[in-house]
Length: 640
Image (tube, rainbow, N blue to C red):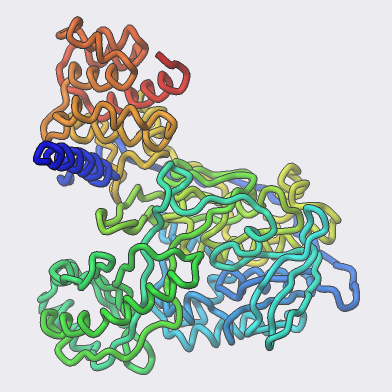
């Protein structure tokens, strides 16, 4: 009995160690910060000669709508307004009793802006109108925002239908021709020539048969989505006193404040101990309201399935139960919060991530970080790749800070279903690219493009699939957008990192989320890599990119766990890891001291990496990027 218990205990220990290894290495980053190396970038704006914008004259087909926009999120408001400005008869429906969605009902009142290196606003068009309407403030009054959205929709050819819940698409083969919605307890059919899905979760697209992934599924990590947040409201905060404390008395370190916004406070909030590990209080983002109350975006909620109502409801209840404890902590610990009182919470969760539809192009993390422009650009962004924590085991990561990058039209044209466009955070982005592209101003620029493209496709009697393959059509749509206020200046960003010999390997590991460059785009090319970083980079590469071979990681854990160590990795040790995962473990003792040469001979180390390393002992990050790519190619193409 004792032996049986001992065996069981040992098995539990090994399994636990494996779990800790995988979790702890989900995104291992060395904790020191250094000046970024060789990451300078320069923007060159290109001259363009767009065609003269054409006027779209759409036929009047009686009671049928030209464009139906499902979801009066900010992106949907932009889409409806844009389509209507181009002669389309528009219907916009929304489940709430008014427009604004996440901004008005989720009370997300601080805007993630995208600006160019010269300070120019990159997301102009309808977003610029909205921004001006709320007073050109990064944090705004929620009720004021709702008024501005209603004003933007007050065009004679826009019909607004609230308390109207989308139920299902009406299909004719692979074409969507309308929707069925529930209004006042009754099912109603609405027919339209083009449908724009502006729901947060791409509900229309998913129910119509558009393929999609969820969360980090596209990078081989299932069940991982960015944490949700319940925004809550405080009263009793003296904002002028808070400005004095932060700005002049400097009592709260690493915290910024202006007349409507404040963010930081992490030196205090990091000490909060939640009642459950499924919650975390991060740094505070504060937004002052016109009535003197303050909205707080800070509480992360893990494990919420944004596609499951029960899970969402449970997340809201869990957060609401925690709020009194949080407010008491703020009162007791942060200067200026002594009289703060809880004054309610948002009607809906701020859900950062659910579906990512598959469009004709999927925006990749490398497109964002390396500032790619596209011939069919419809929006330009620059917000950092801010991927919030996906579980209690990580704290969230910044995968880079672009100078500026374009969103191609193909990202909002879904596969498999005609007459449909998808705008907002569920457009065709990878999990990592969405860390930047999911922001509302970028989505509103997409909405503008969707409105124009819908009207254009009707006027020209062309499908969206036809349009993406026709450069003349794309230029016409871009010309109309620019004439109506969009910023779509072509650009080229010269980035010195892309001249590195290890550039291909670097982009491979970044695509799979195996490195975290941070706000400084620090790829550490010429720094020695730590053993633990190399170990996790190789193991997580296998688990994510080659899941059918992931068993080799578990099988060899006992032999390789010694490399989970905070010390420089030398080339013999790196070669041992490569050889072990490639099935040459039995030859390691025979070639001891010559493993580097053996790994090169087997094709696990490229000629250029071999020549770079042969005169030194330690492995640099650039070497590691190239070796991980070589290991991938070997495992993908060969079975020993």
